[in-house]
Amino acid sequence: MAVIRIRNSGIKKINKGNSLLSGNPAYTSNFIAVGTGSGSVYIFSFYEGSFIGKVFSNTTSSLTYGYDVSWSISGNNFIQAGLLPPFVAVYPWSNISGFGTKYANPATAIPESGNAARFSPSENDVVVAHSNSPYISVYPWSNGFGTKYTNPATLPAISGRDAKFSPSGNNIAVANYSSPYLSAYPFTSGTGFGTKYANPATPLSSGIANRVAWSTSGNNIALAQDSTPYVHAYSFTSGTGFGTKYADPATLPTGNGKGVTWSPSGNDIAVAHSNSPYISVYPWSNGFGTKYTNPATLPTGDGFGVAWSISGNSIGIAHLNSPYLSVYNWSSGFGTKYATPEFSTNSVFSVAFK
Image (cartoon, helix red, strand yellow):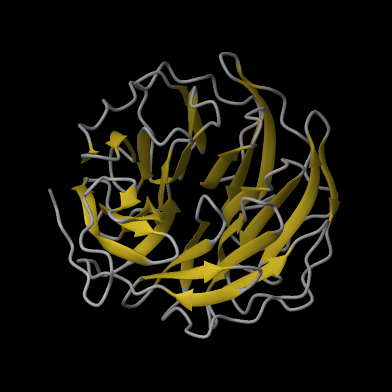
């Protein structure tokens, strides 16, 4: 049993893996994951509203560069995409013991660098965006990878940078290195890809698309990109496809968009980007609102990954330069920054909450 003692507190100890702080049930124990340049993944206990604990569990894979990390919806599995073979790795996860033994690699291997990997909302499928053709691969999932689905008839553009299922699981959006930079497909679990939706009527600016996000309703898609305005958003209708592009935010992010995500409520949208302040967050109501004031304590370098806690009461950003991870309280604006625990890395590219 790991014990962390906290000075000057009414809390005497924390039991590793427990869901509550001993003696104070107001604080719930969740987890934060970060993917690092070495391929190591670190998981921290997270007592929202209080503090981030020390490393709870970690694993070192051969992937190198934790470009994307996340849990499945149930939290029972953890997935990572990275630069080196096998390019995607999935582990069982336990809130008591942490990482389990890695699942076997897919029989049909990812052909090159895994840039992103996610479970579907039903957890019946896994999507991987990767650098070489066919740029996106989807597998059935049932306690392991199944036989890879047939590639879409019309492939995405060169180099899949990101791919995510819609909240319903009935569509997949893909961010790409080259024009048209953003693609979407109908998807049916057990059957596979449908006919690619038409590209957005308002094309994107020229620049690498790094990350894509669905709104919680599934009615909007956002894209973080390496050219001004650095973030784009479109309406989307399942079965029909892309609608009108929303007006750009009045105050743009200050550099290349590297990450984008909506809050769990759908009322805010966050962009991780290069150049100070490294993170920009906007209210969302059928379009971008006035940018929120920057956090009082800024991240220390270019932002890469950005994620909200499950409750939406905290927001985390993975960034260059120590401490590599910055997490803030959130309530319609930035609150106090959490102290970041020490861990061994020289870069962090992705962050996820459970």
